[in-house]
Image 1 (cartoon, rainbow, N blue to C red):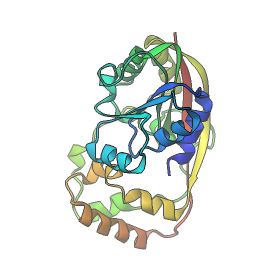
Image 2 (image 1 turned 60 degrees about the vertical axis):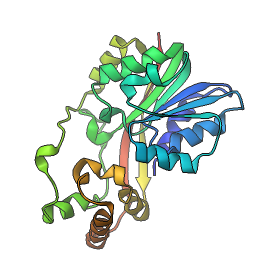
Image 3 (image 1 turned 180 degrees about the vertical axis):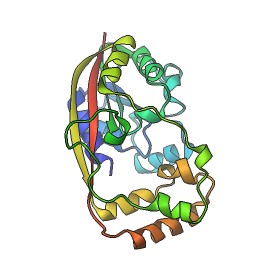
Length: 245
């Protein structure tokens, strides 16, 4: 499901064959795998994630000696990587990692001067969007189903202040970067892809973290049965490529 956005970011980075790159919040390793396809035997990917289950799953999918798997937070990149890196990528997670300035400062600390970083936000996490920028299609009703069963603790939701694009640009400059380019990417997922996505534990942890996975899968199936019409869902992503100065 993340292959489109991962490929988009890495293509915009123009990763060199011998690049040293960090994949931040690597998850199941989608971006890591795409980056490896761009590298020769001298290239290295530091794959960093704060979730041990996600890293364990990624390790079973990617058996490549060029990957350095690291368990830890984005704010600890200096401790988790070595040397000054050429590139950094964070697909579909930058808003989850903490205060944007601190995250960008941590990325800047591990990049060489001129090194580049690419990341993205879904439209719903950006305060100002272009005309027509929206999620199109009826969303998968898992949260509604979980609420119906009394399984959602609303008090546990973490507040999130959506930044404007101007605020993002300002924060980038304060953290020691300059904007190279920004763009909007529409991503469309089939009903089947959306259904499979919700089966991954990490994607429902924010509201079902206390619910056993077997019960979560039952909720996903219930939501699938109630989802009418089953439809493609398109989300617009705000993407940036920035350079360390």
